[in-house]
Length: 420
Ligand SMILES: Cc1ncc(COP(=O)(O)O)c(C=O)c1O
Image (tube, rainbow, N blue to C red; front, side, top):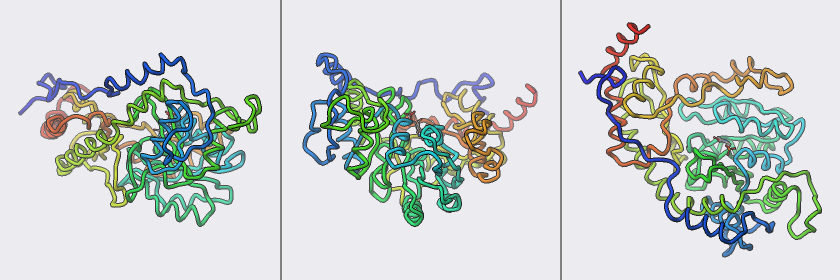
C-alpha cells in the first residue's frame, strides 16, 4: 500500500497551490497612479451616486470602485468603508438598530456578524443553521423573532446564497430589516440576482483571506438612496455631502477606505468574473470526484443558489463512515500537501467574551437551541478558495490525497494507537 506521508511515505503533492492574493501589473499601475497623484485619501464626500451613472461624480479610485462593485452585484449604491465589521456596524446603525434592539444572527460565522450589533448597543440573538448548507435556518429564524427584533443578518456562508425568499418573506411579515452578510459572497447570486442586492442592505469584506482583497476593506450595498446617504455620512464622521466641512449631523466614525485600497480593489474587481468561473468549475469537478468516498459529504447547493462564489469548499466529515477521526484525517491530508482545515472551532456563542453577563448572550441556552451549528463545528472540513484557482490536475491531487488517506485508514488507526 502507498504509505501515508505522515508516516514517512511520499506526499501526493509538494507543489504549492496558487498563492493568494493574486495580482498583476494592474494592481501595481493603479497603486502607482495614486502614489504619484498625491491624493492618497478620498477627500471629496460625494452624494450617493447611482451605480448606473456613467461617472463616479468625483475623481477618486474609491468612488469609482464602489460604483462598479455595486453595479456588478445588481445594487444601486455601494458605500466603501474600512472593513466588513465596519460595514456591518454602519449598515445596522443606518437601519435604525440601536440600544435595546435584537438582531438575529447565525452562530456559524465570523464573530463580527454578532459583535457588530453589540458594538452599537443591540443584542445578538442566535438562531440555528441548516446542516445541508450551513446557512441560517428560516424556521429557526422565525422562532427567534420577538417584539424587540429589529434586524436579521443571514450570512451567505462560504459564498452560498442563504434561503433568501423565505427569509425575506418572514422578515417582511414581522417588520424586520434584512442585512445580508455577503463577506464570503463576492460575485455570488440568488435566483440570478446579485448577493447583497436582495435585503435592505448587504455587506462585503475585502480582508486578506477574501475572494477580493486590499488587505483590509469593506463595502455596503443597497438600493435605497436615503440609506446610502446615511451610511456615507456615518463613515464620514456624521458629515453631509454639500454641507460645511466642520458640521456633523449624526454620531459617526472615520471608516473611510484609502485611495490605495480603492486602486487595488479596482484591479481585483476586473478579475472577479474570471476567477469566480474558475472556482465554480473546479468546485463542480471536486464535488463529482469526492462525493462517493465514504464519510465525505459535500454541502448542498440548492437551486435558488444560482451562483456560488466558493469562498470556501466545505465538506462534512463523518468519522465512522470514513474510518478516522476528523483530526486524524486533517493531519494526514495536510501531510499529503493539501492545506485543509477544520474551520470555526466553536459556535460563536461559546466565545469567552460571552461569559460576561453584560453582553446578554446566554451560552448554555444557545448550546441547546443550536445543535446543527454545534455539529457543523465538529464535522466541517474547509478548503480555501485559492486552491480552486488551480487547474484540474491540482483538483486531482486533492482527490488522490483524500483517496489515499481513506485507503490507508486502517494503517493510520494502528499507527495512531502505537503513538498513543
Ligand atoms: C462572515 C463574515 N462576516 C463579517 C466579516 C468581517 O469582515 P472584516 O474582517 O473585513 O471586518 C468576516 C470576515 O472575516 C466574515 O467572514
